[in-house]
Amino acid sequence: MKRRHISFTIACAVLLIAIVRSVSVNAGINLAQNYVPAPEVVGEARLKVLFWKVFDATLVAPAGEFDPAEPFTLTLSYLRAFPGEKIVDSSIEEIAAQGDVDPRLLDTWSESLSGIIPNVALGDAITGVRRADGHTVFYLGDTLLGEIDDPRFTAAFFDIWLGENASRPDLRRQLLGDNA
Image 1 (cartoon, one colour):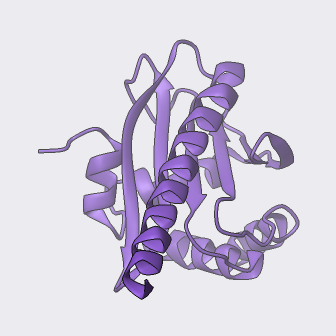
Image 2: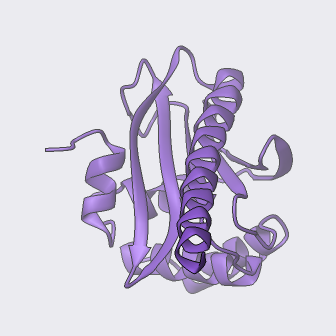
């Protein structure tokens, strides 16, 4: 009887992950239609740290071809809960690690992000949109969270995952569709 309960629990967990993944991909495509011409998935990846699954990421760009100077969306579907403050702090640390950024600018971006990024629960998806004008718009699901009107922020923020100096090159490679 106990073995059956464990199998049922595992089956439910697998189903929940599949549903979360499917919903997040659809949410990313639906949002992308508002900003990206002919949106298609470029690539998908899962971030794991040690034993913990952190998020599934999906990159959507015009005709499935990523160009950092064109509109695109990056959706992070969280596989565990995180305080918004931790997400903001990690983002700013990753931006700082990318290169020489003025500490005052990092403080400004941190303050802006803190007013936008909420706490997330299992299954929540945050989508960052790189608009045609180079600004970044953030959504939780299909709810607008806020916008940062600084193309320097946009480039630095998305370089966390998509830039040549990304701290997780395997994640970058998968997002960019290079699954070799």
